[in-house]
Length: 290
Image (cartoon, rainbow, N blue to C red; front, side):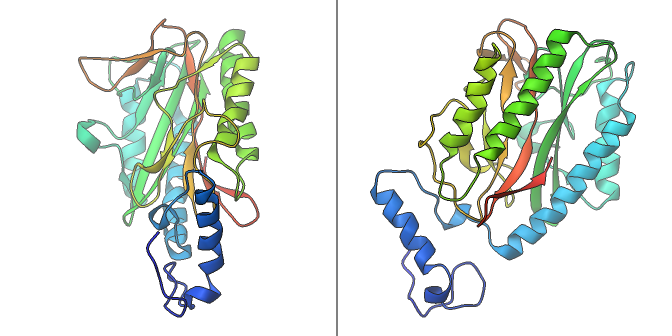
């Protein structure tokens, strides 16, 4: 971390002198770094002013997913979901973050059954009785980003699929319990992985969560196959997603070579994912987006 004078204004924008604000905080991080741990730099830690703006983006993101939840149904195509997301987001003053992101053509990701993530909405993709679908919404409001996703069970879903959807939601909840200041991302990752494995499932390794708020994807990259006490130190002001992708079969995945986006399970067995966006606080955590 860059050096700052004790009587200089604190880097967090509080207006206080550094010695009265974040000096002790930074010293504690430096001590943990010297013990061999990966620690965040100031670019990863959000200021109170930034957090307030990110909350506004999250409010729109939640409202968009609520709107999808009201309208999603058997028989609709996923292009209709894309339209709902685009229209709701823009009416509320936001921008769909996925639209044109690195060439992605739509406003939302719709991932059905064996599609792990990044499913592209299409008029030809019809939701059928028994499908499970992840709807992944990301929003920009006044330059600030939010990101969360939900699973939906369409009609009469098999017990196998319902258990998968329920288990991945439990994985997120158990991981969230481990999010606290001065712990490690691996504490959360192990809780997620242990619960998935205990239920006979596997966790995708190549794709994980991420920091978010000032950009769509920021550091840290968040794994769900790490061990407690490992990975980056969690400190107040960090914001990241918890979004494990849990597969009924193998953890291995493949990316469609034609569209360059759609990721499916290698064995074509179902996958499920829930995504929340969480802030590390002085006392524990705050879920910003769900």
